[in-house]
Length: 356
Image (tube, rainbow, N blue to C red; front, side, top):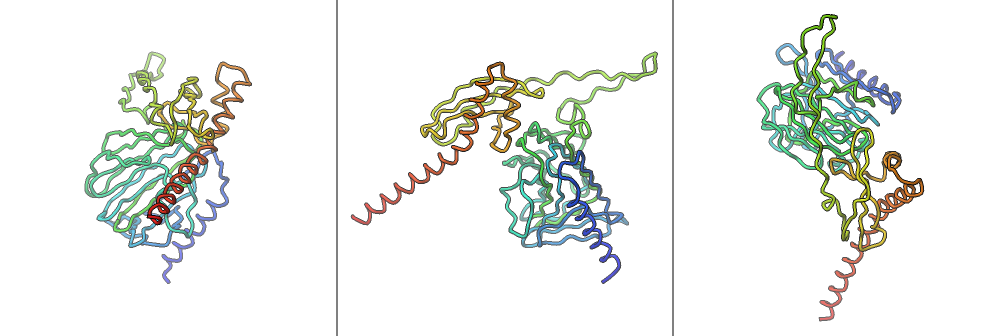
């Protein structure tokens, strides 16, 4: 075994220990991978495909292949709502899949890769870059050869931006906590990666500025004032978002809804909506963001903070919280009841056919 292979394995081991021993709620996780110097800060969780250092035009880069089962590279960025990734990328082949660059909601293990655990990010093939937020949408055609791109994820507010080719593309993402960051190489996909700069943390201002999630072009900085200080003009305030379509957020057997309150928390609007379900366990309150996402049962503290901003009594706030909690827990009951009823009908039909 050559010295290079031994060094590479030691790097993986040392990096893995650093990631495991780092506190999960660290203010900032900053990972830099320059393959020229064989620094690879990614744990290769899933055994499949291939990943190796190769030389291209005198520069060492990481070549990855999905093989027949796919391969995953990743890094632990737990509980970080703000993630920024910059990298150089070259797609060699994508005849049967994508290179997926996504936040992942579950730790990888020896079990088979599960795409339904992907939260949001981008997919890339030889033709285009796609946004992913549960659905795929083409953002931009990709050029051949090496490409530099920047992905910004604001999981706190549910928005992302891709910077590529001098342009910026904005798209919505689910509101959640960042957990793991995944490079998934699908079967039939080959790529080369270089100059990866991945940062994650809890402070918006450490990674982004006021233009990161805005299509507006930053205004030019004017010349120095007589005092010698530079002045930057303010960009116009973004247009307010339209009211979400609450009707589209109904679950099975919801018959109608009632908008109870609109409030503001951390400079963002939230809506308190009561849904009426034909099954009592499904009736209750939903807390909806200004971008139309429902806040799930895992975000109890966030819901309490939002309800605390309401201009109403503490008793009313407590009742609203209980109604929200009951609705989240009751949704499972609704779905189980519907499935049980359908199975009963199916069994009844089978008996009728058998009797006939």
